[in-house]
Length: 69
Image (cartoon, rainbow, N blue to C red; front, side):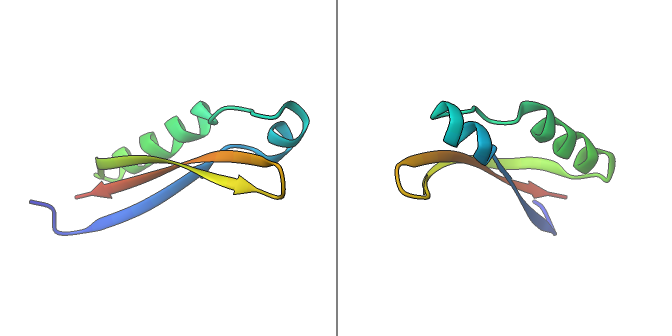
């Protein structure tokens, strides 16, 4: 059982979404956030990938991480 929770949000870049139509999730940034949190004693409890509309025609993905310790 966790006593404390924290939510982190990582979103794919807007420039790649506009220029290429889709740019993919920033894996290095996601990995860096998880490693930083793990160093502070956090563990990933839950992960959701959400797709949102971006401006008028595009959509981009967001990873919502729930961390606990």
